[in-house]
Image 1 (tube, rainbow, N blue to C red):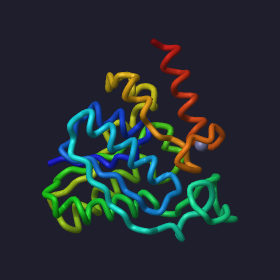
Image 2 (image 1 turned 60 degrees about the vertical axis):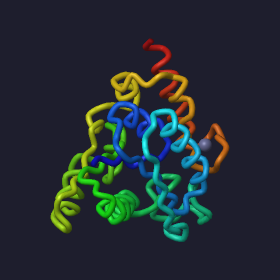
Image 3 (image 1 turned 90 degrees about the vertical axis):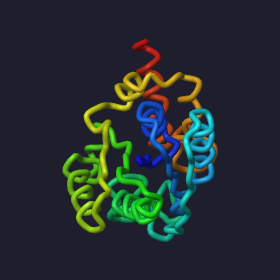
Length: 196
Ligand SMILES: [Zn+2]
């Protein structure tokens, strides 16, 4: 069985449409926009008839900046920072999914995530080795790591009506129009509509 980590943003919703996993898992780790991410994810899964699971682990005190209630940390490289976030999310996902019989976890990293260590191909390779080494029979893959978000959207052939349900805002459950997540959403919509 295959599972996809679904944040409800554009990258993971396009990947959901493209790869049609058996399970999609949305994690509420204490981020401010969790409810909106769950709503978008649930809606997309209903449309595609994919089993949607939710995992809630309160990590709210570990974040800083936009997506948390903590002030930006002095060491933070950008406006939202949860050190070791992807490592944490992939690990708690694997802890749950291995018991559900999942043997492959898909994550929605894209080429532009390469600017962060946990979005690089090296990171995916290392976490895949670690997760499969520890319990065996479970792998981590990132099918879109050579694509930009726009390339992934076009490749997936997801209809715009479904893509519009994506939630990208980092600061809350209603899009603020200003944060990095909202800016990416607007930029990508502009890029795809001008290429169609
Ligand atoms: Zn926003």
